[in-house]
Image 1: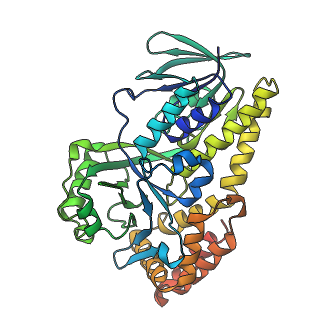
Image 2: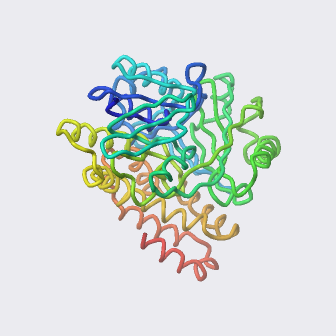
Image 3: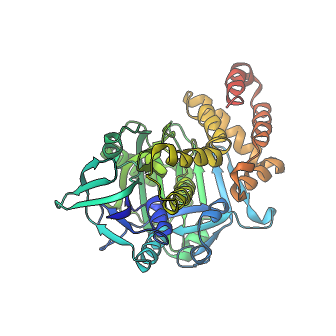
Length: 422
């Protein structure tokens, strides 16, 4: 019998498995064939991810080959640029995520952790003293505790335990490779977050620029996978606002990945002998839909909770595991998530014209107001989210309202007043 079984080898599952393998007999199960290839990803890791990543990984230039020095919060009217040189230190790092996952898995194996790749769980039986899993290959496996880190791909498993499932919608992602000199010529920034309601009313179109590679994508509406793929192709070929950035770059639309993106945390993330981590629990920041931080943070919290209970001979009851929920709420939900919730309400839960007006005003303010840039920078570098300053968000919200066209203020003040209450 294992101490812990982890289902899902994304960033939350793999990070948790590595940390738990230091003190527990751990099995990691992943439906994709990671023995053959881990899907290539380019992601932004703001400096606030650093507390949840060990130095041996954070300082590895294969995993993090370049610094994150400039972002572009882009509207149709402005390139809302924030450059780290204004404040003295990088905003974070750019991650080649498949390399990070591979090295986490290798370290996990070095600690005698076991893996089952290209396997799925067909059935789970929840006994009083253990959890029993039956795989698609007919194998029965037992463990004291179960960690669900399946992202948005394993909702049926968590439903079987009585967990809620987070809201979700479709997203599309495409990674491509390009000459580094060409990327440096085309992009002064490493991350672009672009709101355009004509692309989507649910989230941004984005670029992440790595070393010799970049990724693009957007969070969709209710389109089918084929419709999302067609729209991405039209954007890359015809959308004038981005053509200067992608001159000379080729894209293979056969490599697109379409999948569900989770949002909005579920109320309860623990039950007897079971925890839900990361995106599977809806731990993705509203508005920004940043999943890496929440995946890493929830994995770190869960590993500490499980280690303490193992040391004390626990029976892993919900009452004992509920400390995980409390710590997740304290670190992420009580303060940091409130900013994203307010922004989601302001920018997405409205009509296209209003969304454009507010986002244009924000990007203009970012360009012109150093204090706004300072507050954004502070959020990217904060090391303890329990110290997150929500007063700064309210100050920015007030300034943003003041930056709106006069004709818009009369109709939008109730929306801003409600956003301030989040």
